[in-house]
Length: 79
Image 1 (cartoon, rainbow, N blue to C red):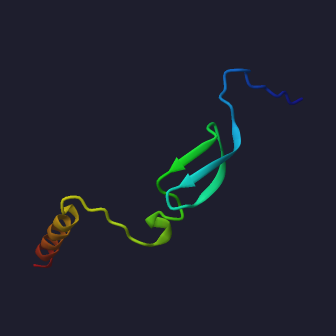
Image 2: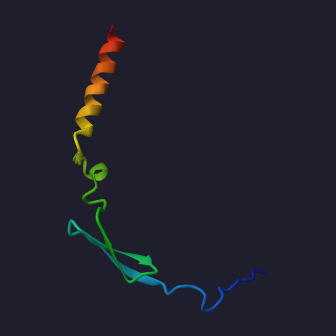
Image 3: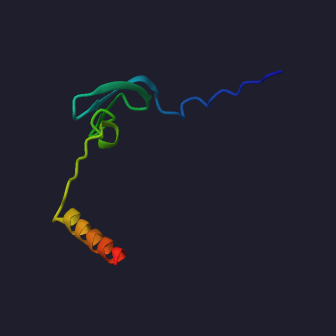
């Protein structure tokens, strides 16, 4: 005999099965959540990993400094 346990009443948040998720890029889709609407900054339509487009946000030339250090270590390893 299978016995089902029921959830306790009035301790769980309200569940919205059709929550609308909106991204800055304009993409939108629905999911289940405990909030009625979600606004996000990045989604699978605009994320560099999924799109294949590389977006580098460089602050204070850190990427260039890293590339210079990597080039120096590559030269040392060749010698």
